[in-house]
Length: 473
Image (cartoon, rainbow, N blue to C red; front, top):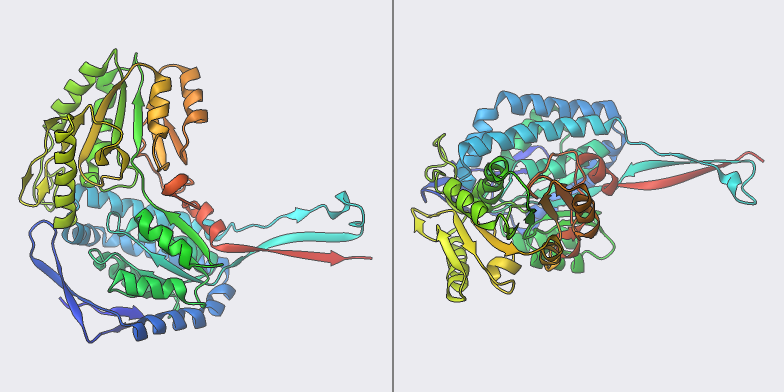
């Protein structure tokens, strides 16, 4: 199956293609076009030319396009889920969940398109402001360059495209090299939904070449990026005065206080650690358990982990499948070996079969180990003992990241302290840090990036405030 670039409402072939293989089976599933500088420039130019039409489009029309997209995606949900399972080795049940969330995300975007408000200002609160009327309005920022990752290739694209269209912007989208099929699929549906030509353009190829070209081009007004801190920092340094939103990952932690009913939370914690092979920015990577219940928690966590089914992502019974690439598999195994050689205890997992890393639980890992202080992005979780909640706060905060964190506690004062003391973008009380619904403000601090996603909040990032003052004197 040979795919084409999507530029100005047309499917365009290129001189060079690359084979896209299934992470699970290694079989070739598509031939993907490699865009050149010329084709990327063309995509930017048509987005630049289309920006005026999109900015003038009435809110109800932008909302209708997004509503139509959500209906079309719902009608083809099984096809969309299969695409995710093939290109990302996402277990089919998880893929179906992502598609359902994506549908909802576009519905939220449609709703928010109708409520982009300004405000009135009482200028007479200042001396000299008498006799004047002032109000603000939000206007689209222009051309948005969107660079998306492989782990949620449909829903994270929705978090870029949805608010961009809702706000009246145009988009040049560079999807992850391993997961372009879902982006092409959405482009096809948006064309059917009535999006004007040039409003969305999808280019594939080298992330370094295409991404840099998009970031450096003066016609692009904003960059929205989800990916690694190293790439995100590079984008920020190159972007100049462009608006930039960065979501750069984490090594999310949860605290388990004494007095918690462990049976009620084990399944939730295991899901948070191993869903999508741990390839989630807010995947549960570090667990800090009060010493009074530590042994019981570990025993039940390991027991539940060992019941997970690994295998073919197209099998409905599969819980975990292959990591996105052999490089990620090798890196994960190196980090596990480093932990083991440093005295940490691998109580389950730590083995590879058919490109799959079995879900791995590590005890007593030192904070300096890569599995502790870096983003593992694999089915690996650490469980460490703490003697107090204050100690757990310090350990969670002892990280260069700060996206989300969670705490399970029956003590309201402890919960309030967690909300105050945990230095992260979101604190989940009596839940894992992996919790996300798509209209909430989502983003982090420190090297987890800056700016917020969530449709209302992303629209604020993708619009500019204009002040209008009337002099009645």
